[in-house]
Each structure stands twice: as C-alpha cells, then as structure tokens.
Image 1: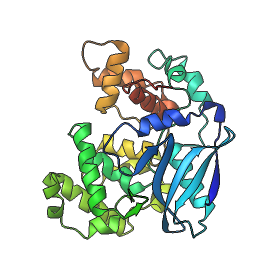
Image 2: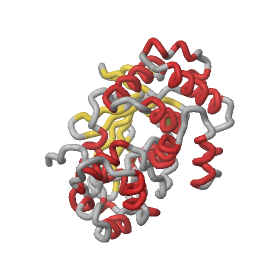
Image 3: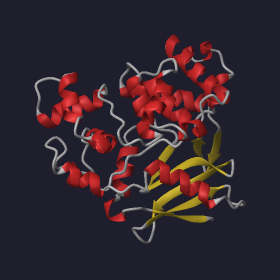
Image 4: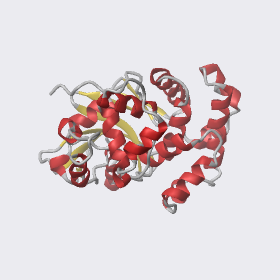
Length: 303
C-alpha cells in the first residue's frame, strides 16, 4: 500500500485526538469516518478518487496517510498532502494565538483545555459555500440530515471493504438540476434555489478556487455576499473554513453566542453590541477564537 508522510507544523501544539473529537461530533457524517483512532475519507488525487486512512506517524512531526483503494495505482503524493494539510490546518502555528488567549478574559484557559486542536477546514469550495446555506435557520441535527441526503444522493460514491465513501457533490451536477429536485429531500424552496444558483455560478467559472485565491478578505466577502442566499454569517463561515482568513468573525453564529453565554455565565445570550465588544481585540486571532469557543460546547475529550 502507498504510504505518504504529511508534515505537521508546530507539532508540539497539534493533537490528532482533539481533531478527531471535533470531526466525530455527528453520527450523520458521511464524508469521513473514524475507525480505531484513525481517519478515513475519499479525496481526489491526480483527478482520481482515492480512499485514504490518516493516522499519527512514528514521529509527532508528521501524520501518515495510507492509500486503501485503489491499491494498484500510485497517486501524486502532493495532492494527498495538500488536501490533508488544508483540512486539518497542519501548516498552522498556534503559539501566537495561545499566547494571546492568556491576555483575553473570555479565552483564557481554552488553550490549556483543548491544546493541539486545529481549525478543521473544508478544502472543497463548493462544500464550504453550500454547507452554511444548508444550515441556515434550522437546528444543527436537521442540517446534518439534509447535508447527508444531499451528499448521498448527488455525490460520487464507491464501496470499499463494505463501507460507503463519498465525494461532495460537484457544482456541475447540482447546476444541471431544477430546484424542484431538492425539495422532496425537505430542502425549502429558497434553499433549493440558492444551492442550484450557487452551483451554476461555480460551474460557469464565475466563482472558483482560482478566483478566490486572488481576493483579499474584504473582496472575498463582497464576492460571496453577492450570491443569493449568502449573508454575512455564511460568507464569513466560508472565509474561515475554506479561505482560512484569520480575521473572519461570525458574530451572528448561535453556537458562538451560546459558548460565550456559557463561559461568562450570562443570564441570556449576549447582545450584538456585547459580541462586538468581546471580539474587537481578536483581530488576526478571530477565527481560532471562535473555533475554540465552539469546541467548548462539546463534551470533554476522553483520553
């Protein structure tokens, strides 16, 4: 089997177990699986679907990816390295953020509690844009149900050793649909329309990974909010999880509001004015601050 080493930057501040804990938060997840403390998923390498298993290496300075299928082909190592690096933010350096948390009353202690957690991202632009559309104005459990239906119905699929592996649906596939194709899955008419319209914009090349790579934070946010169904929260979610702009702030996020209320023991959710006050100093640490506050809503890691 082909094995690929994937370097981990700042390895002393990386925890594979913390990343797995975050990735395992929904039983409706179908793009990846956690098996015996290892991570499995399908991705594209050399333009071809490949199923890989990701595990800690013999040294903390790298992870090791093993190609599970197909086993008769040698795939470009860089494609696999780049995907996993972007997904798990292996090229991050958390030292400045951890130092900063000690000066912020709201964030103090988070680094010690969740040390090594990286901002788990979405290397697929279409997924990063459409997931917040799917999740708008519904609870997280139902959002995962809709996402699962969307992936299983329209995504590329292979069975390997009895397990179903999927790729997130391609924009061209969704662009070819009418919005009525999605409503039987319990998508609202507006969400179905937004998903199809977004897919058409991407399938036409008007919005792409190449286009996004040329834009700074403000320009990228403006480009995203110009899409139907994308507001400030959705745009910043995409910019956090796909583009990895560190200043992406999701003050409208219910999870963030609940985390702040819980940590500060507030009688009610904080107001927008309070949220702006809490977040004002974060600046280049905003995305990680929000991600670690989200993590505080999950159960402790059982080591």
